[in-house]
Image (cartoon, rainbow, N blue to C red; front, top):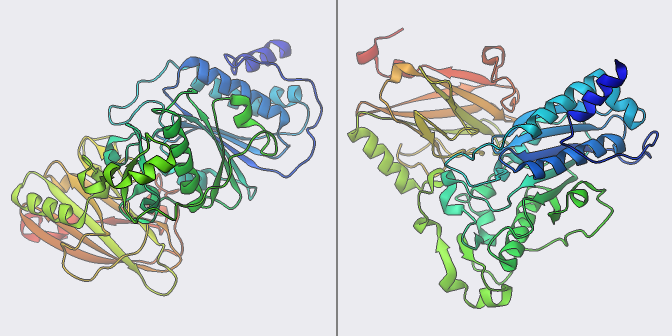
Length: 456
């Protein structure tokens, strides 16, 4: 029976394939924590190679290291476990490890999922990686991240920043609040990132691949990570960081203008620089740039919400009370009666509404209500205010916070101020038990309209 159970544990990872050489305890070296992000809609052969590498990783990892497997683009954790001591065979015989292998095997054997209509194929959602790492990380060891999917960013919620059609964001975009890549969370110190591409010929051509790779290097570097490999070789992606060819560390282009937007990269870098002015695509001209709406666009949404009583508009901004709290992050979580989904930074679009920005720094609560350059905004596609459940989550802070909330409903604008005294943020970890955490505050929006709803 033990032999049969052992065989089942192995078969749960193969389609996984591949053999692992017999060995005893792996040689001791500096420990890391592994995060393997896998695009859910990858074809079966790509998933199979990932399974084989995870199987090898269990054999070669140091005892005590942690391995996480995450399904993308929604960043749904598949499995997280600590590697036990002993040989590979001894490790995979342990009931806890068998359970995790079976869970990973089920995920990898699942029929290829259809990509959501709003995103391209084999997407990773790189904007959410750091936050996912923060929510899952168990140890102080440096993170080693393996991304398995398409590097070409293509999300219709950020259509103006799509990397299809041989374009990439300019270097200057990484310093602009309008670029979604500029406001991502930071990675833990020492984070090493490898990207296992879905095919060797991803992108439009070699120039496009080189430009996208360089941009991601700059992006991860800005947020304290290092992209060390971009490869379609699964063994190289999972190999020790000391082996094989590593990407050279890039620097931002000193000759580039402060232009913010997408740049064509069909030519090589010298040709592209000479023609840069004719190949730039301003963000303002990019289609349906939902989550980077400008102040004027938000003001227009407010006016439309006032005129269209079939919709609700909400916006929040905040300041910290004290010094050093500029990086405070407050998040809107909005539910609607009858819907199983919730609108938040993880789900920017639901059947009942859209979140137009996920702001991650303190701004200002002064001035007119239409000055929404750095406000987090949401539009609800119905007018049933009483059906909404609205929460504020202090994702991160080191100071008390004062929040201003603006609501447009039934042609009226109302606002409220609320003080959040959370000692620190919870990184949304209490979203299933909100009343037990001081990081979560529920808003009573109907109280803003006493003539229609009465007073409590």
